[in-house]
Image 1 (cartoon, rainbow, N blue to C red):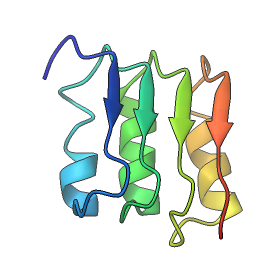
Image 2 (image 1 turned 90 degrees about the vertical axis):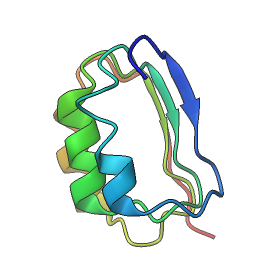
Image 3 (image 1 turned 135 degrees about the vertical axis):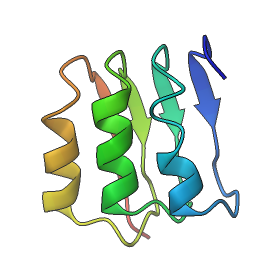
Image 4 (image 1 turned 90 degrees about the horizontal axis):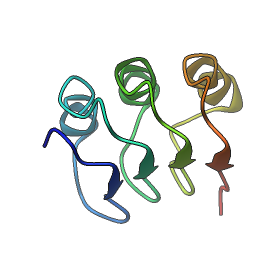
Length: 88
């Protein structure tokens, strides 16, 4: 998984634990699409802390995330340029 810069898990039935386990293995990750996955606050925070090059994140439809939880993760992603977050 090392060296991957872009990853889309959109609409996949992946556990939050599996998503959070990406962080220590994807230090080159820049773009991550988590739209409509089971991502929770812990997984998002682990990814934010473990992927220092993250510049684009999509958490559209991740209903378990709150604005405060997203903001906490944003503080760990200084290179973030694009954030997509809609709840439908």
